[in-house]
Image: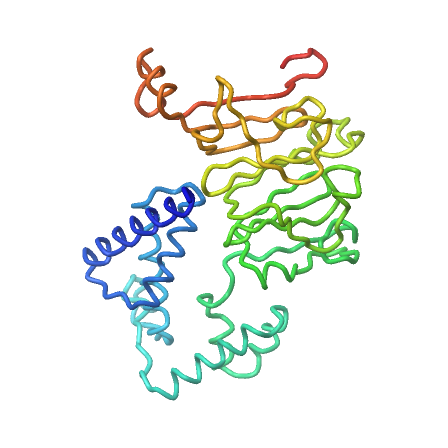
Length: 341
């Protein structure tokens, strides 16, 4: 399919860029390191970063972690204490590379990964070796989620007067969260979308969820937007809110409250995530990828990538090359009091 071909081409492009950058830095990558770096670069590209910047950042982070694992001990240099002059403050002392030590450290990491995250503080008090593993960030998730509030909105199914760790962020690698009115959406590294809190529409097809629930209609999602909470003083009188998600291939899914037709579907509500198909003069969804999406109360704003005749027309009227490939589209009502659409 077209999506598979696009994914293969992008993977080949990332692999070539990694090889060039690694050779320039004189780094020898193992197969495991190359696979890990490729996944990290793909994740950065989903976030909208440039290929060269993503490759450079991934290589620097990988090299930093390698050095950190090889340098576990430090020695303070007190030679400047009396003179109050800056000297070589810290001198690194690499630890001994022994098979047993390395195996012991790796085994502790594997065991600690399976334990509840909130137990790590107690484990760090057992001994110096365990404390070193606990404080090593290389095996921990980059982002964890803490929630607090009423039981029906926290995702923990219980009242949380203080911030409490959400186990979803430990079992799944979360890269982005979006908050709506008493609801939260989370995107994982593989592109799945999880939801908890109050529903976007009052219907049996879209019930409230006290626990994180996966939206099975969405796959390979890279960005998500929802009507912000507290958008205006009448917000809580609305029977829901609007949502939009963008996949890696640039497809657009919308769902939720659709009073002004801003979700590009028929009906006053879209109860489940639904693919948008448009073939009008303003936008052709099959040929023009969506780059960004933003939801308001009654409107939707899109940034799309122009192709073919649309881009040629923009160039003919004198627009710069940087702007000729994108366009901003809006749909819905901006001001209900004034009737601006």
